[in-house]
Length: 285
Image 1 (tube, rainbow, N blue to C red):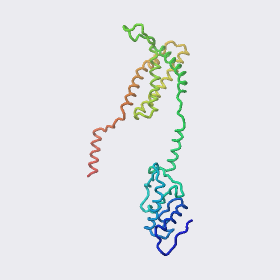
Image 2 (cartoon, rainbow, N blue to C red; image 1 turned 30 degrees about the horizontal axis):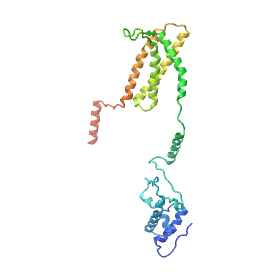
Image 3 (tube, helix red, strand yellow; image 1 turned 120 degrees about the vertical axis):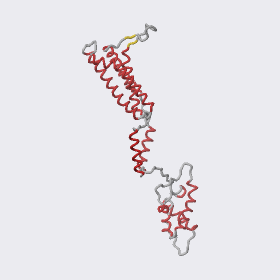
């Protein structure tokens, strides 16, 4: 601990700066104005001059292009004289860099949020190729189930281009797995992407779940009919299966419209606008 200068004569600022430098080296920072006043028995003006001298000595050594002082937004005028500044590396203490934190956010929580971000940069990307391996057997089972159910409900070979290409035929039963399962995957992508309006995301969520449930019921119905040896499905199942292509087309068109439409403004009926205007007029009076 440095020995305070005690004399009955006023000590010049130049003589106080070396003693203040020793005190700053012991503390590891530039002492506050109140500390200098109490240590050297001087007034406020002379204490400010001593601090200014110490600050001028540390400024060239501490000046770095990538570091800057962050002001304290909550510092009051009464606390300004009691602020203790960090010393430069040449003055006996390592530089301290204060992270800038927004008001209302705890510094400890801000530091804890930086750790997962750094860890996530080191971690590798999640591989999605196992999804293809999982989808291959599911595709075979779902495709065969829908085509078989379509055959039991009246779907079959048709000539889509009569008079143009009479030899061109297609089995209309393939429209069931392509339509239902493709829409379910598309709706799931829209729902989980988080990049669409709220209305589109809500519609995609419920329509994707409905498509998955319909797909599961279709597979169950086909396997039950096949196990029972039924060659023609009941009319109830035929009605539902026949409506699936139309339902998938409607849901797909609606979802595409919601994705590209964006948020819609809320329209207030005219009678409510008139009532609101009257209330504002009454409040102004």
